[in-house]
Length: 170
Image 1 (cartoon, rainbow, N blue to C red):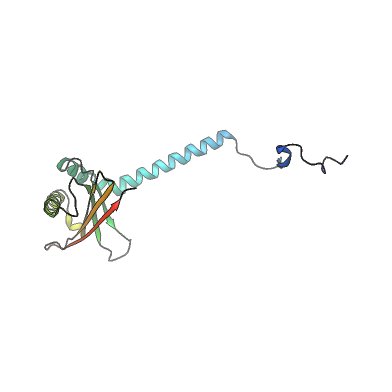
Image 2: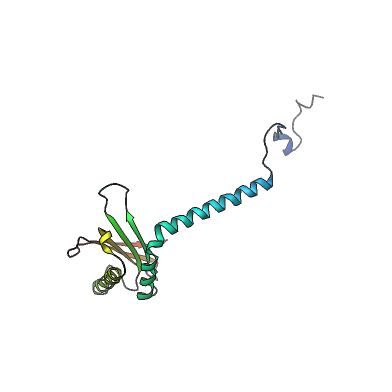
C-alpha cells in the first residue's frame, strides 16, 4: 500500500486542499458585523449630506409644485453640468403629466407656462441661465412619452429648444 500522500482520494473532501495557516490573521464575526454597521452609518451619512447640501435648497419649490400640480411627482435639481468656468447654471424640473407631451401641443404649452409662472414666483431665476423642463407620460401600453423643453433665461423672452422621445418601457 502507498503512503497517505500518494493515495487516491476517497471522497470529495479529500480532493479539496484546506490549508489552515495558524499564523494568518482572522477577523472575528463581531468585528465584521461592527465594520458592516460602520459602513452603513458612513453611507447613510454621505447620502444625508448630499441631500442636505444639494437637494434641500430646491425642496420649497418642489413642495409648491406638488401643491399646484397634484400627481405630477416633481423633482427639482439645479447646478452646472460640469464644474467649469462658463458652464451655464441650469434649473432642472422633471414632472409627470396626464397628457401626451409630444402630441398634445396646447395642453403642453399651457402646462409649461403655468410651471414657469410658479417657478418664477417662488425662486429667484436670476441665479440661473437655463430652465430645463422635462415632461413625461407613462402610457398604459407601457410606453414612456417624454418631451424636454429648454428655456434660455437671459432676461429677455426665453428661447425654446424642444427634444421629444417616445420609449418603450421595460
